[in-house]
Length: 398
Image: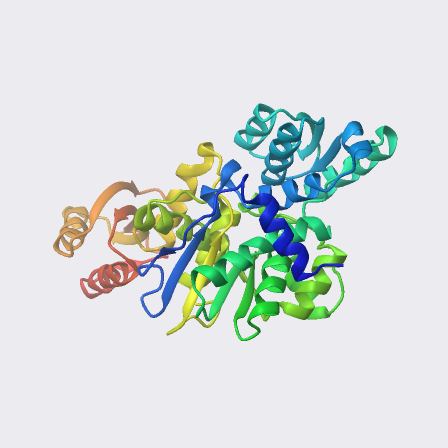
């Protein structure tokens, strides 16, 4: 049974291993509120996961340690288990979904674990890990549905109340629910007035649906850039704890996640993975009531695959109105392209590329289409340019 004493004990065990991450004030995330970041992306292994994994392994018997441990993970839990096992001098085998970012797979291998890649997502890796546990006698270190793991994650809740005693809201990413279960339990046990909100990716809303229907839901499929929280089904322990201690759960879109990653890079000089940025996205886009309140966004991890970072940045630029694509219908006569360029230039935007098409399927046979990609300041700037083009007689097709 999870108790506050367990979380305090975990805090004592972990103090020589983990980094106590300081709060960072982030006024630009949402100007109408007082936002702070808990940057667990700066934690050893780049994620909060080492807290729960290390505490769980520290409590194994000598016999269990001799047989070794096995875990399944989208990447961050894998690194936490690998570090903890290696530090304790025991064998570790990690089952990862084959779609896990290469950077996370190689980092786990570098920390001393053996790797088993499994087709599918986290839940498929879980089934394979269970099979190997039964065959080889390993101790399974669950990434979220284990009370010792939850206690380890709950140490963050203790730190948050110590670092900002008058906090109003805490926003926490949710995959399987281990992080928010521990954080919410610790915070509500010590200060029930603090609101704790969870966030999931809209493409993987397993806890959201379970929370709304008051029973555990298993999704048939999931798809999100936030691979660290791509879980089809929450745990039994975590679901029960969320029902008791979490005030609400919301979702954020892929574009909102990308915009949050970009904001953290530009404004705070922090690199967050998709799963780590969902809490910031919820605050940025007012998914939870943060206006006028002291709110902590838990940035749970920073292990993003650099090969997709450019795509994330481009989507973030588009979502925040920094890039804009417009398709216009022009009368096919000399000077039209110049007129469009002049309007855009007069309003301070920069044309990145353009494509002029005469042979399209326009209703007007005397017309052609122009696709323009522009660099803009924000969404208001985009709207200003659209209105100017319409006022000058151009027809915008999208």
